[in-house]
Length: 264
Image (cartoon, rainbow, N blue to C red; front, side, top):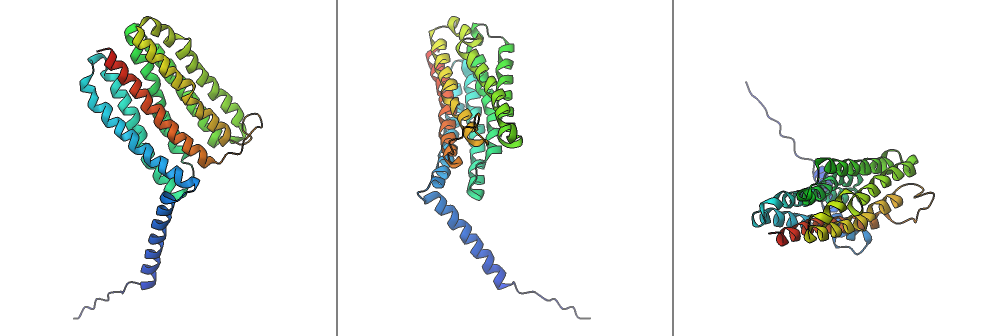
């Protein structure tokens, strides 16, 4: 009895097509990174954002042992914020390189995890002055409402973007109120000059730094705000978001770190 094994030769045309497609994809990626157009700036800022926030995470995690015990949780949260953002930016960069479109879903997932943690920082640094757990939940709930309604208006129910934008805006301004004139501000007044100064700086991050997000929402939804839309290229807003995210998240952590150094 003889057994014959037939080995099929690989199709040279298929192999050539696969090699050509791989080479083309590689060339497209290199062109995107090394080009001079707006898309190349978007890809570059995703890369820089990933590395900057990863470096910030390493710094915060290692510095936990060099701060007073009462500030370690705050520094840990700062490190978690930038670490979560770094992971998401890695995935967002890959998405953008593959599809050259804004990674809106991943961006909102990142915000939904990091923005509430940024709000928690206000509770942690005013805790010694008597901040209650209820304040933390107010800040978290307002931030979640702000982001969920923003996502609905920008992606799911775009025809009602103005309605969702107004709800999101109200939640945002509630956070601004708490930080500038509400419980957070009043607690900071009694927490000492260092905490008061830190809360004021963080308040500017919320008022000015976070303002890029509602602006991006207006640009990214049909009809803009009350019928106004400036027609800005979404890729431009990706650059603004990437730079703004890095400044806001790393800046938040550095303010907390500076506070911990003053309060040793």
